[in-house]
Image (cartoon, rainbow over all chains, first blue to last red; front, side, top):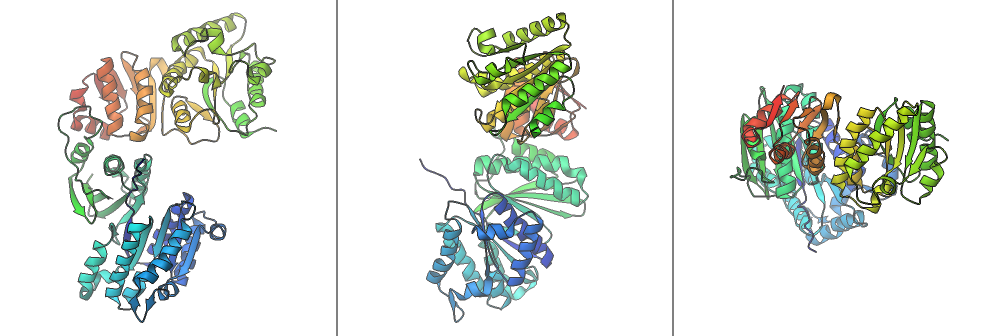
Length: 301
Length: 269
C-alpha cells in the first residue's frame, strides 16, 4: 500500500520584537510536544532559556520532555561549528550532525519539528550567502527526512536593500513566509483541522477587536482549509493581516493546483467552497508560490 | 467510593436522555445500581437493559423491576427496529404510571446492540428519535456506551444526539436533539469532519413534515453541512424550516444557490 506523506512545512518568520519571536516559537514547539511530536531547538542560549520559559507557561513539562529525549535544545553557534570550517559549510558534515539529530529525535516514529537560528546567526554576521546555502542544505535534508522547520530572522533584515537578492532567495526556499504584521499558524492536514483553523481565526479577530468579522472569517477559512485537507491533501498555514478596516485571510498549502469554480453537478461532493469565498469576500485571489499556492480573501464589515 | 461519573449521573435533574461514556476503569454495575436506586427514590420504575447472559443483567435484576436484553425481550432476537422500541417504551411508560409510578428510569448497557451490529448511522437515527420519545414520556434514560466496545467515531455519533452526556470524553462538535412541540434543536458546529454523522441525524429528524429546527445556537455550518440539509430536503421533499438562522448562513445559502436546489428549505431569522 503506497503511503502519501504530506509535504513538510519550512516556514520563515520575520519578527520585529524578541517577545514576538519567543511567543511564536514557544507556541510552535509547545503544540508539537502536546501532540506527541519531538521538538528540536537550535538557538542562542538566551533564546533557548526564553523558549523553555514560554513553553512552561503553556503547560509543557520542559524537564520531563528533555529527559525523555522529546525536547532537544542545542546552542546554535556550537552546532554550526560542527559542520562549518573556516566559514565554509561542509554538506556531508551537516547531514551527519543535523541528520543524526533529526533521526534520533524521530527514532520511535514521532514527527519532528525544528526551530533553527543558525541561519540568522550567519546573516547577522554578514555571511549572507552562507546563510542562503545553509537554508538550501536544510531543504535538501528535508527531501530525505520528514520534519517541519521554522526559522526566524529579525525584520530589520528585510529593510536592508543590499541583501535584497539574498532575501528573495531565502523567501523562495521556504514553503511559507510570515511577516511581522501577520498572525499565522500551521495545521496538519487532518479532518479536525478546519475546526482548529476557525478557533485560531476567531481568537485573532477577538484580540484585534474585530468580532464583527468572525462569522464571515469562519466561513472563509473553513472552506479554504477544507480544500487544503481534501484536495491538496497537505498541511497548511493560515495567516491573517489587517489594514484600515480590512482583514485579509490567506491559506497556503502545498498543492500547485489552483482552485476552480464548480461546474454543474449541484450536489457534488466537492466544489462550491470557492463559490462561498467569492460570495463573502470583498476581493479574493490565488497565486502559486514555491511548491504550492496561496488563496487569500479580504473581508470588510 | 463515588466516581465522577456516578456523581454526575446522580446530580441529573429528574428526567432526561443521557449518553454515558463508560471508561475501562468504571465500576458499571455499582454506578448503574446507584442511578436506579435514585430513580426509585424519585418514584420512577427502574429498568436495566444489557446484553443477554451478561453479569450486568443478572446483577441489576436485584434493583430493577425488569432487567433484560431488549433484543430478546422485545425484538424477537432480530435487528434494531426503532418503531418497536418506541412502542415498547410508550407501553412501559403507560404501565408504570398505571402502577402508581411517576414514570420510568432506565439504565441501558448498549452492548446489547452489538449482537446484531447495526450500522453506526442506524444507531444515531434511533437515538435521535428516542430523544423525542424520552421527552414525551418524561422518562429518565441513560444510554451507556463502553469505550471498550464502541469505536470513538460511533461514540461521537451517539453523543451528537443526546442532550446530556457524562463521562471523560471529548464532546461532539454538534448536537441535534428534540426540543418543544415537535421541533428539534441543532447547536454547535457542523463541518466536513462530522457531515456523515450529521446526515444520519438530520435525515432522521426530517421524517417530520414540516421539519422545524431551531438553529439559533448553531455556531457554524460549512458548505458540506449545508449540502447535507439540501440533500435531505430534496430526498424527502419535506418542508424544512431553520429558525434563528444566522445572517452569514442565510446569505451564503442563497449565494451558493442552495435556495434554488432545495426550495423546500426555509431559513428564518
